[in-house]
Length: 121
Image 1 (cartoon, rainbow, N blue to C red):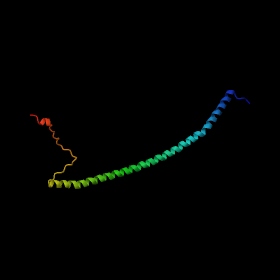
Image 2: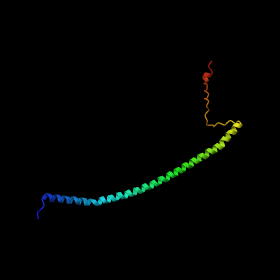
Image 3: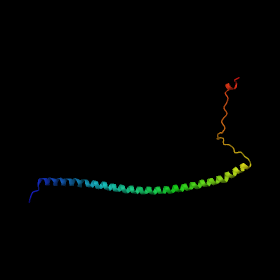
Image 4: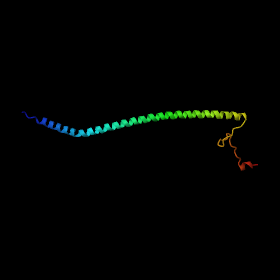
């Protein structure tokens, strides 16, 4: 039987050693892949839970907005039913509406005359 050339033998030895390194690293790669898949499943479950929560919050928000609109409409109706007749009555009996103590006077305030200007001859 012929002997292999030295170059081929060295190359085959290098391939065997490289293959051994790859096989040694393979379990770590598989473990890392498993952890990645587990994390992906957890993330997808969390995403689904968050989507469900957002859908519930949107429904609740829609309901609250509808209730707010109903309350505003009821308030406006009450104000129209109460205030409008009161204004009509006040107009008929000629009652002047009272001003709020917090309302500003639209007329400018009188400018006080300084005592030195008032006594000039």
